[in-house]
Length: 152
Image (cartoon, rainbow, N blue to C red; front, side, top):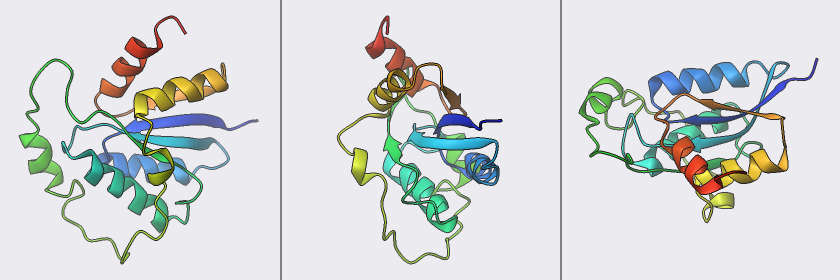
C-alpha cells in the first residue's frame, strides 16, 4: 500500500507539534511533502515556522520537508489570539527550550518568496489526485489558495 502524501497546514503550538511528531512516526502510512504555516496559536508566523523547523531538526528531517510561511493575520477580523498565547505560551510550545543550539539547516529559506497559498496551489496541481491537504490550524491559507486558484 502506498503511503498518503500530505501537506500539513498548521500553526505549530503544543497540539500541532504532537501532530507533526505522530505523522513523522508513521513513514509507512504518511509522507509529509511540506508543512505550511498559518497564524493561530500565535500571530508570529516566523516563530511558528521556527517551531516546525526545530521539530524537523529534532527528528533529523530538516532537509527533507520544506516549511513554507503563510497567512499572518485572519481574513475577516482582528487577531484575538490571547487564549492561544495563554495555552501555548509566548513561544507557542509552552516556553519549552529545545535542546538544539541553532538551526543549521533552515528549510524555510528554500521557499521564502512563495506564500503557503501559492505553494499549496502549485503542489496540488503538479500532483493531481495525489496530495491530501491536512489543515489542523485556522483555514486562512486554504481560503487564500481557493481565492487565488479559482477554477484550477
